[in-house]
Length: 336
Ligand code: PBG
Image (cartoon, rainbow, N blue to C red):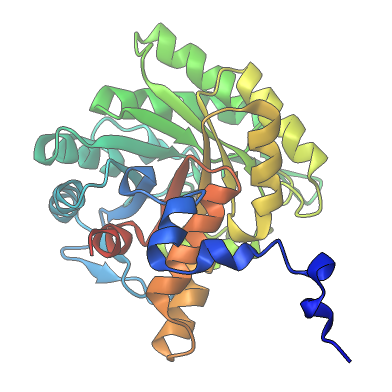
């Protein structure tokens, strides 16, 4: 009996493997790629330390002093990284987050030091109150009949003041991550009034209440003392609501929108990019980092290959920019 493939009319004509035959052909037909220019490197700068301190749940990530962060930023710029994102850990926390908008606050000082050490670097500041509030929530709180309330409109003023103080220190981009309603408009209005018309707003537009932020809260010392963030950050189950959130931020004049976390929310990233066509960022968060780091440490995953595959997935799903703790490593890997 003749083999089916021997019959001329059943010959295999379509062979997708032709385009996978050699590294050169694969490179030729590759649809997406990761470039060092796409990456944003986060830093934790602390007022409470005298020298760099490792973050236990994020191997390879450190809390840094102002001096150290400036040096690390210069090193990143040398490696081709265009942008860094700053989180601050103040020495004093209170119920008004006063160190978030203090002219000589930790982030404000870090921005000035980085601008001096690496003038060409795009400096982004995270605008949130949780690291600066004694209770660890992202807004002003009030106890109402035994229930903790996070007050929306009252918090906007503090967020706007924080953003203006970052711009005054020299930040190029402010990135509100608090998820209060109306914060983008409040921040834009305050920036414009203070004559910072060109300061860019990158809003954490679709930010989900996620268990993947666990390690970050160690790094930033920002875990809420009681309750959770579910009354302001989004429910993991909601995609259409995420689109409405992004639409609102665009209406309120966000220049760049962000989806966060990354890997578990690639569908959201895709839909946001398709629907709005905005410059879109994704945050490859601390839990995603910790998972791969731990597996790699045990020899269960190849870190380089896994990370580059993750970055490719973000690009394929529509990300223009990727916030990742691996930025410095990736810069090195891409060079080789
Ligand atoms: C501040 C903020 C958080 C992250 C970025 N900005 C934590 C949170 O919302 O609790 C998380 C980043 C990460 O996990 O890497 N609100």
